[in-house]
Length: 255
Image 1 (tube, rainbow, N blue to C red):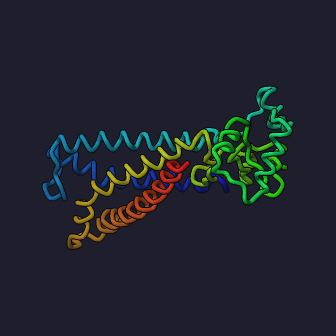
Image 2: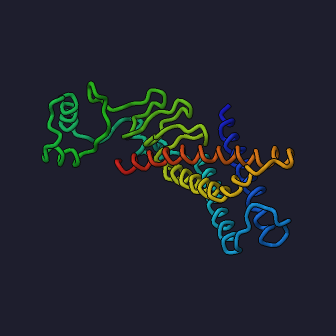
Image 3: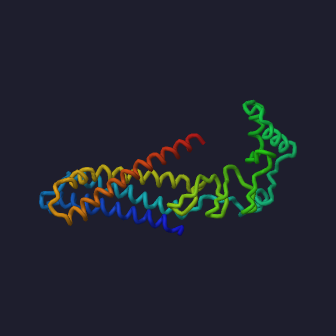
């Protein structure tokens, strides 16, 4: 079941790309080369056509690359490779003095603690700080992985592992988005938006041409109707991904 969503994304990308290529780019190439019957929707200049061809396929290649990398790369797991890593995250030895540890717990439990005090801030920056449980100030520990958790680390029940700086589990790439692949995920969104922008702009004239009087029902069903459906789908995805990308950029800017 976990492969259904990535498979759907691959089918969607293939459908949109094939429609854009077959009913927009290839007819324009034929029109520029004088191979059309002169009755098609638009004949661009050669610089315009080949500029769009090259730009779009560069963006499309980056989209595919980012999709593969975001799907296959590690989101970042709690390190256990070295003895120092195991000492810290398995045994919970963070080399913090008992008096510092007790003071941190007191600050956490004191709802009236002045965290804007410059001395408190300077002291907190001088020691190793990890997220603590709110009630007693203990270190956060994952019972499933049997590991202590660094800041912003969360256990993903789907991947069944703790993810460093976990953002969310994305079913569309069948992977978690975390510390190591967050940049790739943002680039995936960016290139998806860029490709959709190219398609919406490039197919606008073809969409208008689809509303001409129906002369051939077969052409209308197999070409014009498909162009209309794909265009509306791309418009919906463009708006949704722009909102999602803006949200993530705001989150990144604040953190």
